[in-house]
Image 1 (cartoon, one colour):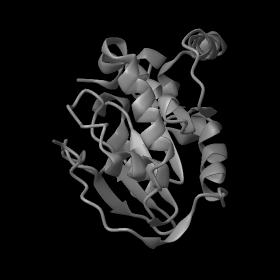
Image 2 (cartoon, one colour):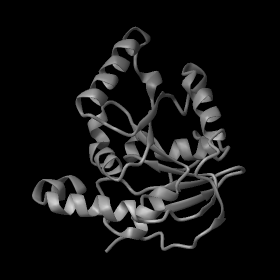
Image 3 (cartoon, one colour):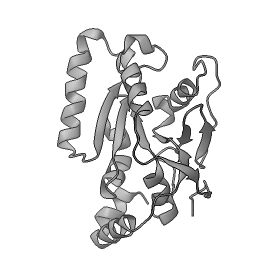
Image 4 (tube, one colour):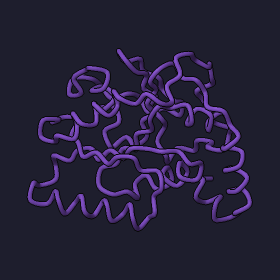
Length: 208
């Protein structure tokens, strides 16, 4: 069951989860550690390849998996989080410790905040901050881009998302068309807090 379903069924569980999460120590993930959430259609493979320094147009998509995939970059480690629609067990303390250990949590969408609402609700419930990345922004006609941004901001307000640090409008395949790309990279490169240089080994398969 998703966190949203369980929240509706049992408010008691919600309070217990938040209490347990607050008492859970973060895993040490070895330097800068970025978790990338999002549906495959949002271009997760492309952004991972781009951040690793590869040409996203010439690299095959990463295989969809139920395990968290780890990729080593030059100055940071990337964690590819399974699609939110997969039946991942969000309720283990190991998984929460992993989420808390990330330097940043990056949530990809393409057209609407509701694509990843279960993820946002869960991160909000355990008081974790995140960036929202709108990929494929170059596909929005220039004349409609400001209105599109207003709609996204309105959705964030109406859904009462609590943990939003930044909203980036980018195109991985055409980064020069969307100046947020370079600003986002600068933001990722400057994030001194919550960086652990040592590493806690963990099971990257959090499924029950």
